[in-house]
Length: 132
Image (cartoon, rainbow, N blue to C red):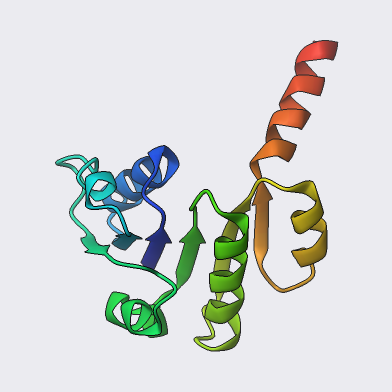
């Protein structure tokens, strides 16, 4: 699969490395060069140090042929805006968006995006830990 990851924090690094090891074609975009340098020697994909809100950056990354797009920045609004753009303009089949806000998850859950709320995952695990 051809996969683009926007956001190269700890989660983005780990996901990029694992998908790369699984022989997927992976492109990682982040404004911070220092973040991209955290990708290990096992990562054999492409990196782009630029603002992912720029349509030309997305085109350079190959968004028109992407099978999946992961939006993993720490900014819910940025993730959701780029997610909708990817879905509507570039027709990316799978758009997976990380959000932290319960409200934004609710608002965007019917927008044909795969929304993953990390806070909800933590909440579920905390409740499970309480009863186990």
